Image 1 (cartoon, one colour):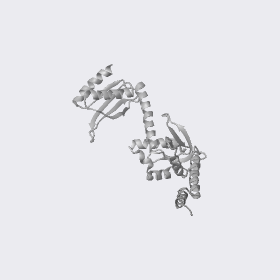
Image 2 (cartoon, rainbow, N blue to C red):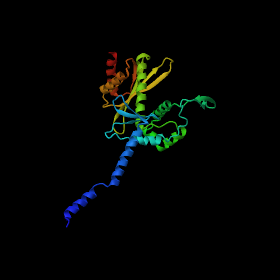
Image 3 (cartoon, rainbow, N blue to C red):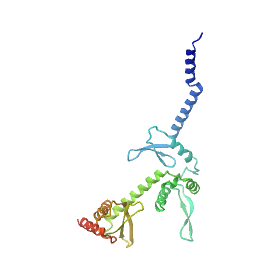
Image 4 (tube, one colour):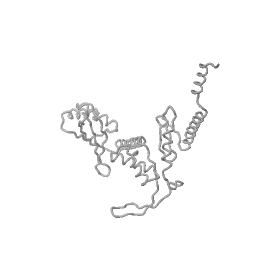
Length: 277
């Protein structure tokens, strides 16, 4: 007679162990994931940023993705490839080939000229549009905008909102570097204008605008800073303006225009001492 306990334990162990079909399915899933991961790197290139972060760049459209993950997942890269490789790119054998197009010369005149597709120029124009029209970065991830661009410029692959944010900061820093060099060498005197107001959230903000006349006697104006300020006291205002001037390398100030608040009198006295030194 067989022992029922032994039979029960044997049956339980058989039920708990995976079947041969389950093991085959698991191995197949692992094999598929490995295949996708290996195939993904045929379309991407790994590189390191200046900050020491790992990123991957698409070889087709130059869009970059972060690789700072503990699991080493390539899901975001494979999702990008599904959309990137579906975009009709026409004859990609020579993207610098000249094409004929009509260029607007005036309100009523069009002229026939040559044109070449430049993805870097399109990307810079997109960044400038977002800055000039004060659009959110996530506009590049909207389905309507994606569809519009796929019709208007199918050879251009949209970057992510994080890439657009980084491009906007890079454009600001490059233009700031040019302006700093301009202030230090080419401008003899700068006229400043500042104002402070409080938002609905009870946060005080200061704007500082620089005015000058260039070599061609044209009046120029640039907002060089817009930032929150801790207090409306005169010395705090003067210190904030002085910090901004040091950041931009501005040493030759001709005039400073302020409103008639009493705190501005103390701020001007503070700046006059600092600028005279």
